[in-house]
Length: 492
Image (cartoon, rainbow, N blue to C red; front, side):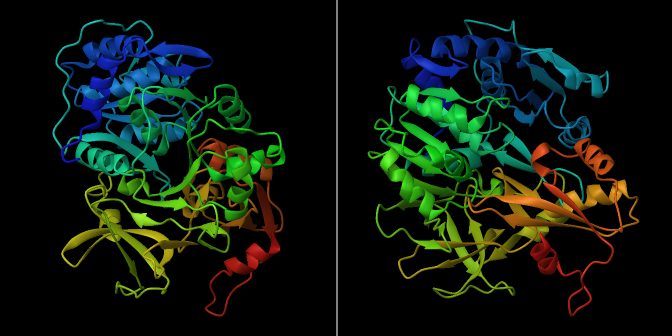
């Protein structure tokens, strides 16, 4: 398994299966030959250009997926820009990421809100049968940068190198998937979310077909249709989507499904148990990992009986090959079996540091026993069998629709609306399905909720907007005179 290279395997696979389907997008099938005609056209455009960081607009188009591959095969770095994100946020990402040119397929309204000097290039007509030599990049060349929620109101960049990506690919392949060119695999995640990277790239290494779900579609309905109508054999999904589908479990029959991956948020044991009858031949696997450790770094193969869980949240299992984990206390000391603490991860998949943010990097990257560990912020303990049991978050980060959200960023944005004149607090109310709803509290007798939400829509993605806004004349305080967040949560 040493020396595996995900990009070289994709190119090899495309050469072996030119006539087989690579993508099915909105019901239209595109072969590997058609995909790479698009890749080569975009590659020819990028080849020789000085820009190192390339923006790609997230669209459900063959040109979008080809653009991602073309950027990688040009030895450059891609950053996804989402057309449904506020202009303000996309501009912050553009500036923070040093994006030199933006590739898009359809008409791009985003261009109107960006400087005229920014080059926006349509990939619709870029095609080429031949290609120059691909540039696979050196190991420390960045493959992509994903911008996540940041506590100061500024998006936080997570750069993943080719070495990180190939270490992940090697370990992920070692999990022993029985997959090949006849398999049909799901890609349901937003391209701004790192699970989309493996959902896109890994199937191409084995010549499989990828069925995509667009951002404008009702995801749970579309996923249901694809799973059943297209007889998909591999699906990685967010557990909350299964909760949406639960009223239809008696009707769903997926005998062709070989693997069901649950990921992106805590998986609920009871929902998975009830879904077993829908996919009787599938192996269920819970995959866990922070963006900073390249997509996934632990795996738990969920048994049909006696699934390990903590308050219904399924265990996250054991670390990938070459990855090491420590459960640490508040003082950074390793804890014993059964003792709950923060999960730290180390190994070749872990980023070197946040993009241009040394201070934040030093807060989360620590040296322990001669190795650098990333502090995940997740509470866990190791059981007697060596499995990691997930117990929730330790800080003010939560998962919303699979995205990791800093509650501080939402509070920061609300305070800007009030010009720092009011106390604001965001609390996350857990749903029965394992997801959560955000509630924003304002310390005021009354508040202009419509204007506040309109302002927040201009600065935050939809998934970060509060489900409810509450006004309280006086916030409850704890014994240390700090705002009592637990009391606020009890008022929801």
